[in-house]
Length: 363
Ligand code: KDG
Image (spheres, rainbow, N blue to C red):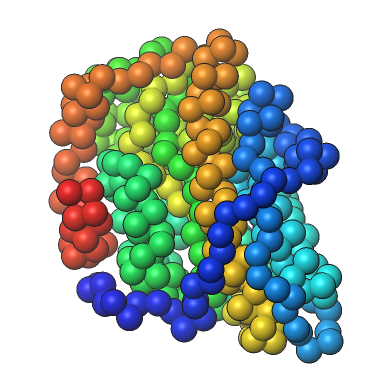
């Protein structure tokens, strides 16, 4: 897949969303179940809404949004901002209802509900969707996104637009990106500071062939599982470990059943904002553009929330007794060297050009 400059999907004209202002403490408290009081208080305030009222066709619309993570995470916070923008700029004619913690199904179930038109919107990780969109597997390659700057260049540039175009098919309309984040390993057995320490550890992965390849290549014993089943599987010892960003580890209380963590930052996982094509085609053009505007504003704010809280929450997990191993650059290099074959395994399927284009961004 070669990146072309005119990559931007037709439905994605970039609005002029800017950052301003603060938000009322009340709503702040309401929205933050699951996060510590400290993290809650450090949550960046929602920016003022920019852009005027949008005229519809006099009809009212409801958008149910399925979210896999809990109310305490950056993802839910971003979705609340999306809700606020859409309801205010449509003068209440478009109502948004948020359903967290996979109430309406996990990522794969929610996407299939969009395709059948029984649900309007969802924010899945890209990893469970690689069978549907093989190019998405580029996000699962280890250590390909060394900094959030590289992530933003992809999200806010041609590569991100091209991948949204790819995902605007199969009954779906892709309108934006947000941040799941850099993944960290946790386990219930012992500290891990080298691949050798992974010998025989049963690690849960997302339903994704590259993640299975990563942990198999490192010498662990990986098993794919839906996020919705993960906490119970950890609690019952069905698996010894898992990997997710710090904010998800805290908001899903994995630290209560996982005493050990290693700051691996081994993969960066995005969320993608998807709308049901059947629903999209019923919306007047003004409301289609409103959803795109709101998704872009949500994307920038959610990334800010995720990054503001990331280090803070890691510290809180430590304060709450989690034993966190911080790898030295030399120790990270051992993991990177051991994982080099993963690139050879998947280069052709993903597309060498796409991988090289992203690598270029960190040069
Ligand atoms: O819907 C939530 C999932 O997208 C997210 O939690 C995926 O990181 C993920 C995992 O570990 O399953």
